[in-house]
Image (cartoon, rainbow, N blue to C red):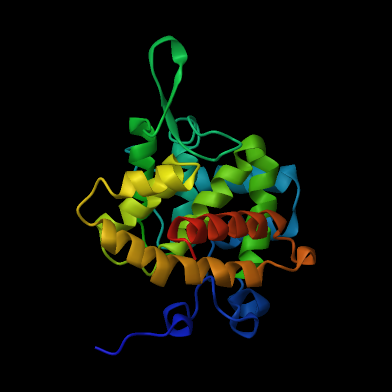
Length: 248
């Protein structure tokens, strides 16, 4: 089978070129979000609109906890709301790394809570979601109005999930996710990965799949006037960290 180029892999998704952005076409502006959610996010970029959008997204979560929507971008946002209070609780706001809590509430790094693991599984198992530059800007405003100190954490996880789109093996995808989100230095990342027999493939996918996407993200978000300042900073941080891990 002919291997896809990076442009082919990302066509129509986050890495879609500006001219193919569906949000630039009025008749297609609701293609990735329900109309009412889109209206509140796009037209009211303030706390009032964000809270209204958040309530509508929460309604996509059934009584049994199952997310009910056919729109992948909306599905991603609903998963975040589902785990906001518990799954995203034990994450350091500076290093953005997850941790668990031991006796006397001491933080234990290198591991994570069951709630974070549940969030991770559902987030990684969910369908890939489109994420254009315009949507990224809109969602950055949305998260900024409702997430406060969680904002960087949530945007970072959204971008990492996007960077893993090209990693088709579920186990390798999970290994890269945890290596990134449990460790704050290169030695910790490498030591974590080398515990597993598939370590070589993890490093290979990091180089061939993840780093190219983060590189593209940095180019997409390098313009500070695009309304994606946090996206650009976090993408650059992960790109530099990934390169340092591989020594490139």
